[in-house]
Length: 116
Length: 108
Image 1 (spheres, rainbow over the protein chains, first blue to last red):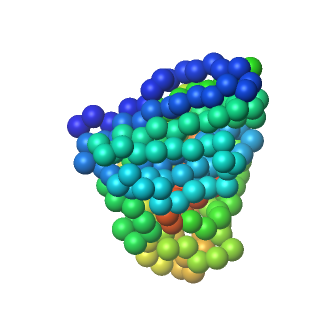
Image 2 (cartoon, chains in turn yellow, cyan; image 1 turned 90 degrees about the horizontal axis):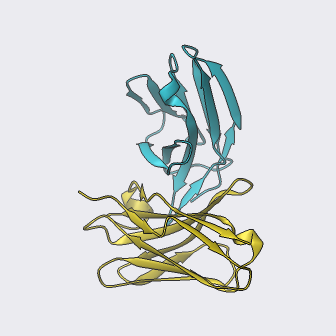
């Protein structure tokens, strides 16, 4: 069974540009979550999508957005990039969504974004 | 998920020594999950605890959930160089709320 696939693995962008990251979850998984990982802030939740609907959103500015397609693949977009957006962006897929089912998350390798 | 605090931030041990990382919350947790992230890698799920006082073992790793469900620990017996990485605890609500992690360095 293929794991979670994120593309691209590495990206260098200039301040002010925008970027789109892609995540293909494990086959059959309908929940996709995105996390930002930085040395200072650790792993922080961005948003979660389930069946093409954003279920939850973390405390990030509106420049961060995402969407999910009918095949569960998800994209994350960051507009007007800032230096502080440099981070490892991780996508995680789960079979289901919500606290009641206590589902483990399977993470992709991540996209390392560097903003210069 | 609820906020969780993790200590220590770093731990450097000699191979063969034991290692423990602690995860604490000011509120009762419905669950605790533990993940390991190798250097340059991504978090990998290790285990989930949901019951008060629960203890689970995976070979040299022992996971505990406190009686009050406000704390958890991960103990590694006789560390090996393959144990190197950062260990995160997380509380799962609609999202995973991660602790800051404990980075383990093992010297041969």
